[in-house]
Amino acid sequence: MAIRSLPEPDLLRKLIEYRPETGELIWRPRTPEMFVEGRRAREHVCAAWNTKNAGKPAFNHMHGKHHLAGTLLGAVHLAHRVAWAVHYGVSAFGVIDHIDGDGTNNRITNLRLASKEINQQNAHQRHDCSSGVTGVHWHVNRRWGNPHWVARIQCGKRRIFLGSFETFDEAVAARRAAEKKYGFGPTHGKLRHGK
Image (tube, rainbow, N blue to C red):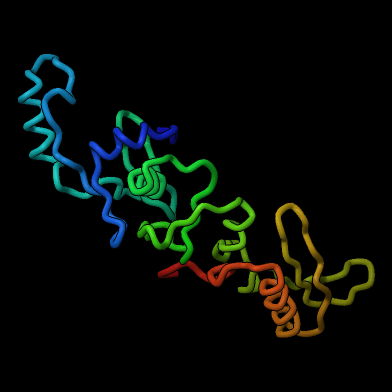
């Protein structure tokens, strides 16, 4: 199921409790008028739903590899976006960044509105990083045949060449200095938790 825009925050607050100190989302008990009359009476459907779900964790399934999500009103929603809307009473437009880089940590102190660029500057190491350090790789110049370490950094759409180096450590030092200079987050380029 595709992710869709969130229901209004007022409706979310009726359906879900958010615990900002832990980041948990909990299903609130529902009332019969929240259900459609069908083959079974609303009261029966409501009682069954409350027995199964009320007071239990909501939005606690992995979506992709790094974020929690859940289904509400027939659509999948990301837990951090639901948490933001319930806590602040408004839906976030744009990117919500997990400050510590852990997409499952939805404590309100770990969530911030950010640009795509800031979010990328806080990103973990990609799985295809062969050197073990983001932005540093071994390069063999095919024309001249002199192998060397290369360091680069990307800021927004701008890719910046930091230099060629004889040693890995020199290339890493250049990359780390550039991360500091351009305000990259402390989790940028680090391995994800448990990896």
